[in-house]
Each structure stands twice: as structure tokens, then as C-alpha cells.
Length: 274
Image (tube, rainbow, N blue to C red):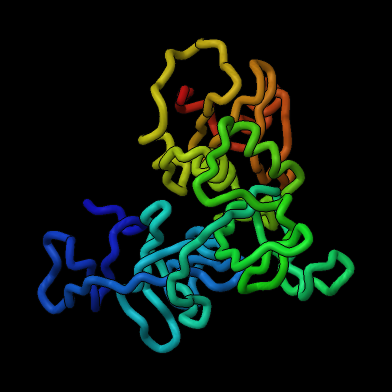
């Protein structure tokens, strides 16, 4: 059975590339667009619950635009859902991305000028020019020290994830303003050029190689529970976005194992090495 999170088909339209489209459902090619707001929820249905989030500059395909809602599939991980049509703009050629945990866009190339927007790590931008250490973008002027050229990759996913320390926990979140366990894993891997789905069950299926029970964990390993995932920071410590602390935190591994078990999360279901 197709996973509805990754299958671009509703009761009216479907991606023309899909097989077994029901009668009465129109096959459409879709239109390329990108996110034009700092962060937006990808919803299960119009005005429904959050599936994941998309960031400024994330590209996608729109398969339907109806009653102010766009039915889309994100390019970065294949997730489908609904966004307000007003959040989307034509695709621009991104030249840079936000490589600091977060940044501001200012109305002038001056750190004392009013801020026009706040952007999360991994937002993608088109820079028109650079003036006095500030990059001119469609949202305003951003400090160049917070940006990297678009083809720049980071080398250590666990270090990327550590940049989110203290970020509030947000179920389905994908930004420095709020993130969940699988979002933290995805942020680290995508920044290093490693494909990664958005939810922990799919991450457990697709990422790395499974290690035998009792293997000593190493930095950069992933530990999975039912509905949860954590980075290994060192053999005695994990790094994760968790509802116990409602934030991204380091936590002693043994304490986390006991806490998660006591809260009904069960034992570790997989230990994966990338």
C-alpha cells in the first residue's frame, strides 16, 4: 500500500507519474514553486494537522490550487500535503543558504536597522549583491557570516544537530524556532548532502545499517524507539529533540533509556550507523 505521506494523490488529482490512479482522478504534471515565507506548516488537509514544515526557499511541485490551498509535494523529502497558496512564489535560483542556526533580515545593510524577518538554518536564498558584509535578498539584508554558498555542504551531521541545542520541541517542526526528533535528524543529514525522510519510522527503514544489540554506540549513530529517534553524541550521551525536556538537549544515555521506558516508549528498536 502506498504511503499517503509520500504519495501525491488526493480525491481529485494525482501526479501523472503515478501508477494505479483511480478513475475520476485527474493526472497532472504539477507546477514548480517555492516557499516565500520564513517557515510554513505542511498540513495533512486544508486547516488540518501539521505533517512537517517547509522553510523559505524550499522547492516543491503544486498539483492543485483550490480555494486558497495548494496541494504540494516537497522536493527535499517527497512529503505531500497542503499549504496556503499565498505562501508560495515562483522559483528563483538560490545562491546561498542559512548556515547559522538562525538569522535576521534587516531593512538596510546595518545591524541597527529594524529586522524584516527571521529565518531558520537551511533556508535558501537568492542573493543579489553584497554590501558592507550584508547580502541583499528578497526579504532584506542578511549578515554574510550567517550564509554559505548554495553548493556548500557540512561534514558532520551530529555537529549540525548540536546547533539546535535549546530549540523548543515542536511536533512536526523543522526549524530553529521549533523542531522534533526526526526533524533534528533530517536537518543534520540534509546539510551534509545525505538524503533523509522526515519521520522516524521511515528514517529507521532507510538510513544506515543496523547494528547488533549490545554494540557500543559511537558518535553519529542513530538510536530508534517506537516513534522516536536520537543522535549519539558519545558512547554515554545522546542528543535529541524530546518532549520530556520540550527542547533539544543532551541527555545521559542510560537516564534516557530509563525515562523513555518509564514513559511508555519501550526499548530501543534499532541502532543504526550511517
